[in-house]
Image (cartoon, rainbow, N blue to C red; front, side, top):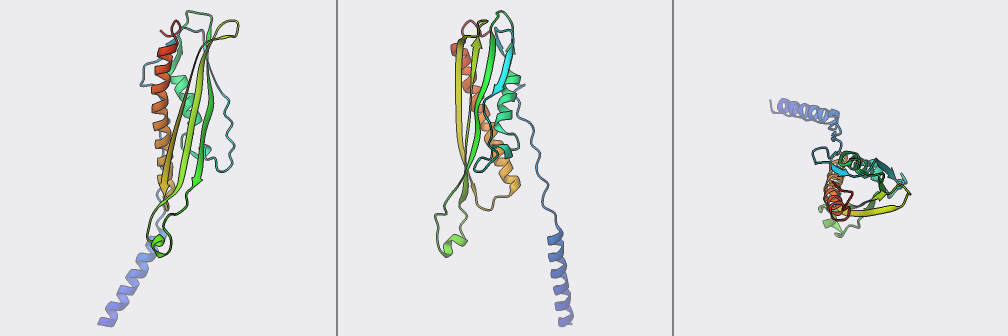
Length: 199
């Protein structure tokens, strides 16, 4: 009887191992686009608002911004389209220019050595992100009459063994946090320096 029980136990363990091996990884999460439609529009006394980018992603390591669920460049474009409104009242126009939207991956050296290192989870990579843009009011002669610029940086480390899904969540949260800071700073700069063109 004991031999039979042992045999059944071995079969049960084998089946459990097979089922575990067949278990598919969790599906990748989906992340909503980052928008600012819930914020009041920034009404500018201009005929139109132009959005352009001078940032060119390299698509090569150590740059990883193109791998983000919502790349910082796209979030900046969304901000400009969502928040900047041409309210008329002058022949001038507004020009929003993205100058940076980069994220660099930095490999971190393990601090713990020897046998202890095998049982210690440490930060494995750090992501250094930077977003920057300037907003100009340009008159009908093509000369800038008002100009503000904002730059936001953020760094985030992740632990070794992080899952792809958790990494994507970390990247998404980084973009959201940077854009919240950018929104606050740019709104403050416009309010302070766009007298005569800010309604």
